[in-house]
Length: 156
Image (tube, rainbow, N blue to C red; front, side, top):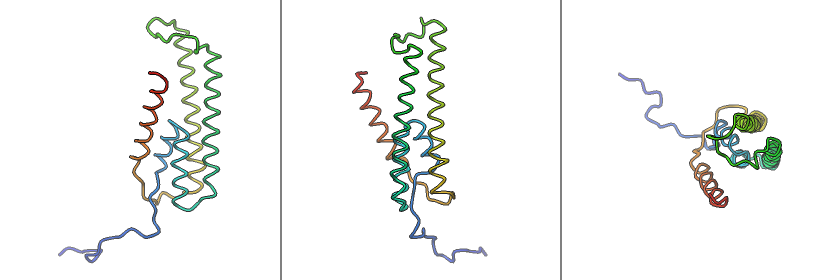
């Protein structure tokens, strides 16, 4: 004889439960684009009812994006990467090292931004891990469309 804990009744989600993008999803999207990660976190905040916190998250993501782009531009000028024809097979070792330094600095900045987004903002409003994760299919599709449009606009 089997013991049935539910007595034949299926469990239903509580009516107050809301699906939100997970902390991991917000981190990865913030790592590649702070604005998209900020929008995902803002959607989470809107769905849960923290409407006053949305402005702070969006302002942080836009300001962080602008600051990292400014730093990236200044680094590109410093390493004289804007005047080079990118040909890694024939580039000297110093040029390769400059590209590597440039890339590592930008990756570090993106890591810092994603960590701030999840550790400061996400953890403040969603301290417990007891939420229902939302599918990231929509943000992925939108991100790929934006990437394609940016490459088309850049003339690639």
